[in-house]
Image (tube, rainbow, N blue to C red; front, top):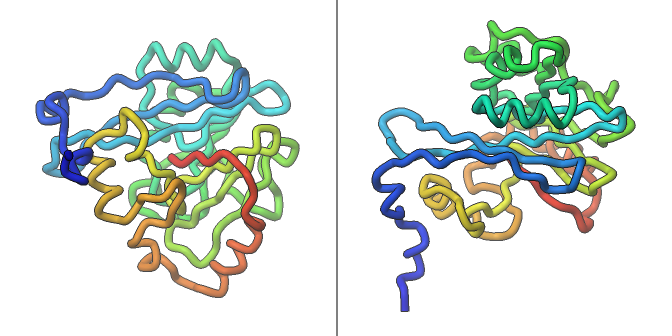
Length: 232
C-alpha cells in the first residue's frame, strides 16, 4: 500500500519548479468563473496558488473578487465575457495584483476593506471605496458579511442566484483533495489541518482579536445550509 502521505510529495514537474499554466474555468454557465495565478514567496521555489472569482451581476456586468495576475489571453477572454465594473479585494492581506488589474480594466471601480488603508503593502494603492455592510455593494446579487474581531478583516459574499459562498482566507476548501492542487498547497493543507471538505486552518485562532465580535459576525453568516464553497 502507498504511504498515507504519498500524495503530498512533489511530482517530477514540481521538483523542477515548472510553473503551471492558468486557465479560465466556467463554474456556473454564463455566471460564475474562476482563474488561478501562481507565485513564489521568499526562498521557496515552489509555486503557490490563489484564485480570482468572476461573477456576472444582475446588470450583466462583471465583478472580479480577489484579483489575480492575468496573462493577456485570459484578460482578453474576460473582456469578451463582458465589462468588468468592479475589482473587489475583500481581505486586508490581499493586494498584490490590484494595480495590475486596474491597468487591465481601467473603467472598473476598485473596492477594498478599510484595513487596506493601514496595511503597508496597500497603503499607496488607489481605492474607490471600501466594503461596508451598512451599504451592501451588490444588494441585488449578494449578501455580504464583514467579519469583525479578526485580523484578516475579511468580507464574505454569498451569491444568491448560484447559492455560492465566496471566502478568501477565513475558511478553506480542501483543495489538496482536488486534482491539480500544487505541492505547496498540499503541504500547507497537511500542516494546518485542512482535511475536511471545508475547514478552519489551525492557525486561525491566533488571528482572533475580539471573540464576541467574531461570534456575532459568524452568527450573521446564518445556519449551515447546502451551498457551494469557493475560497481564494
